[in-house]
Image 1 (cartoon, rainbow, N blue to C red):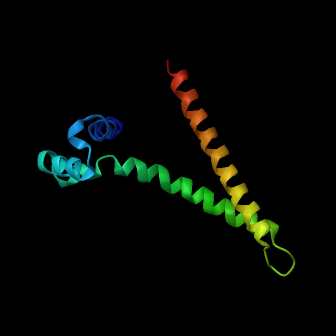
Image 2: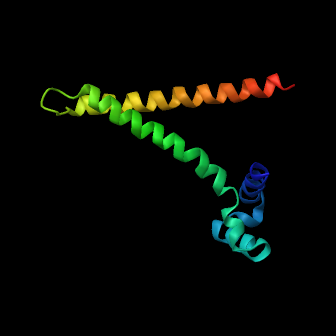
Image 3: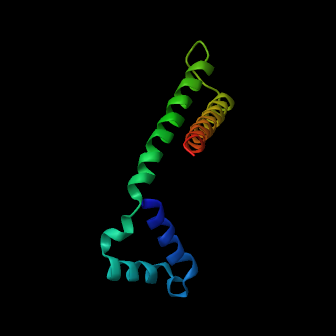
Length: 109
């Protein structure tokens, strides 16, 4: 249901000539659907964003800890590597979760 609402909103803003300026589109949405219509679809976005951010920050902290020297210091290069590692780990995890969801969808057919 929420995906439909988000897609409907994107269609309103992207393809209708009435919504060329964003302010006009927002005014139309508020007048015809109410102020809360601007927040439709926000909950699923936040639900998916929080675990993703947690994985990224947690893996970054882990990689930083692994790359620290004996005195507990990081060079800028190692800090950069920790960030790259966190991004790669997050992307791998996201693809793995996506593939599992796709497999469950196809198993049900």
